[in-house]
Length: 217
Ligand code: SAH
Picture 1: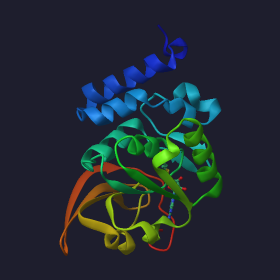
Picture 2: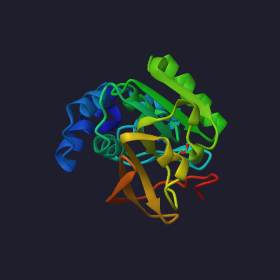
Picture 3: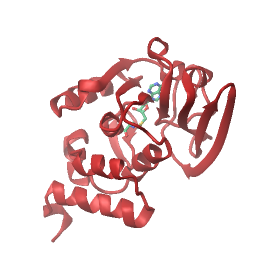
Picture 4: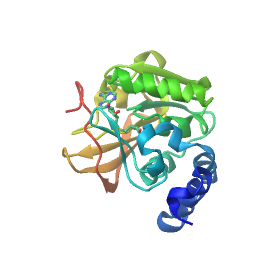
């Protein structure tokens, strides 16, 4: 059957099969969330038919909905547990937010572009995910100090450096994942806080839209 006439649900199951076969994603909680989340409802209506393809999608204002593999990969390296409180920088379409909300206790999500945040809030509320999500419009390079510290911080835009407020707002044994590097190419970077020490590991190469703000570009 051609993918254009395959139901969204079947396309979603195919997408998850690819994540397992091609990339080796194994975490059952991630796979469950990705099997159950109707990603097409978070894509712009004219791009819904591409929602289960493994590439980024344009969501307007020069921003993108991340590739499904990138969402799975970042979620996997963060080793999320259901008691974690998560800070997410870059709400965008809200797809990563929806996945996190199914795996953690609470998600605090910051987006700098008001229209994108409002659209994601509307969609996530209609889909029933918003019950453990708080949204904010602002510069996420400053974190969200009122609710700190966080067990997990995820940044879904590329930064020239690790914003100091994010390191400060990370709990002991907390994990921060952020693409760090040049404007058009970054290394996915995982930081684990152990007391006053920060353990930094460089992971895969990646390409994200820029993190724009006081401690970003
Ligand atoms: N994870 C989302 C969005 C990825 S695009 C998705 O998959 O749909 C990155 C998002 O980060 C964009 O929406 C962009 O506007 C936002 N962004 C960039 N700099 C930011 C900042 N300083 N604070 C908050 N959001 C920011």
